[in-house]
Image (tube, rainbow, N blue to C red):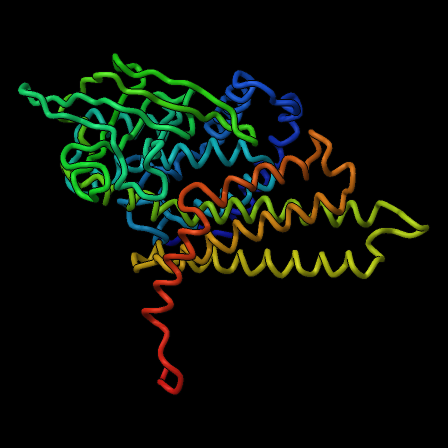
Length: 401
């Protein structure tokens, strides 16, 4: 089967997002949790109506066929990256609604690929691909961020074969809108131990599940989910008992590089906004774009963006190939997110006072990019990964390469 034409997919995604962007004008001042949720649900419905959620589930489980971009049992990172960059260029909420549909549900697909295909959960995945259900990924806790071995939420096996879930998660995207969570919990051992972790499917409607929303600097439905004696049948175990860490890391390995793609979308929009403003705005009797220092800025923004896009394309192709892409993904995630923050900062500077006015595009982009350097692996963690890789793979001077 022939692969999807990625250039055609990019054009389709850009055309769709460009058509939707003006409709976000009604959400210009998103100052409450309720307004964030309203904006998210609007974006989710538009993405659902456009059929884009087909890309977040494997073909074998009801997702879009992507030819030889990826096997039928998984999703194509190259396709996800193209869509995320296009959506992020136009509005962060479109990007968020799209990617979280995959990030929160993909552990179920990984579980099926490992031979654990409960019919109820496969139905959940199918409804997620249709956009009828909204998922959320539950990994982070107050004591477990970059180090998932610190997970302290427990799932205790009961005499009847069910599990009892207790604890809580924080900084969980889609709190307030999610229909279910894929949750990493400890089934044995103590916090700090890498083993003994298991992934579970947890319906939001289950007795003992409670949520508390809070706000972060960019509009984003997010908060805490608390578990107080939540009873879960054994069939809600995803993958194998004790195999939760591998499942969580496998999920992140597939989606982390798409964070870089979103960063590139924000950066490309910031560059476009700067070019337009500098050409139109006059100071000292001439356009700002005629000043050498500002042209140097644009040149640096362009080079960083194009380098980031190349690193992202390399990483996405490497992940899709099935090869070990640890270093490639770390490079793309680190460089793209750090560069996007720098590019968006320069765009704010170029706009002067208008750049810091709440509601302006560059002010929004500045806030949208900041979290990307933290979630799904901080920049510091990516540097640790790359440092280890460089020490292991760089030959001494004079050695053949």
